[in-house]
Length: 77
Image 1 (cartoon, rainbow, N blue to C red):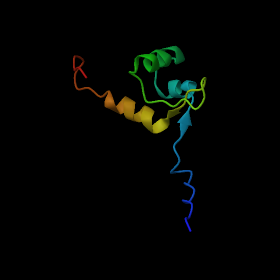
Image 2: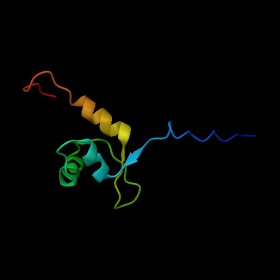
Image 3: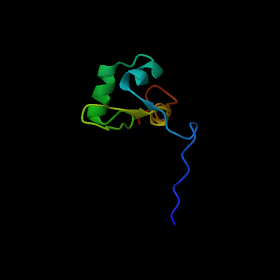
Image 4: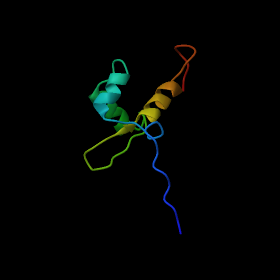
C-alpha cells in the first residue's frame, strides 16, 4: 500500500508572487520592464499556470537578484 507524502508545512511551500509583487521587492522595477525581461529570457524564472497568468517563486526572484552581484561597474556577466 503506497502512502501519500505528508503535506508540506507553510514554511516549506514556495511563496508565489504576481509580477506586481516582484516589482515591490526590486527597487525601480516596473511590470513593463519585468515583462520585457521575461520576453528576452533575462529575468527571473517564472511559471505560467494558465495562458494569461504569470507567477514567480520568491526564491527564484531572490536567486536572480543575488546572481547579479558585481565587484566593479564594468564587471560583465
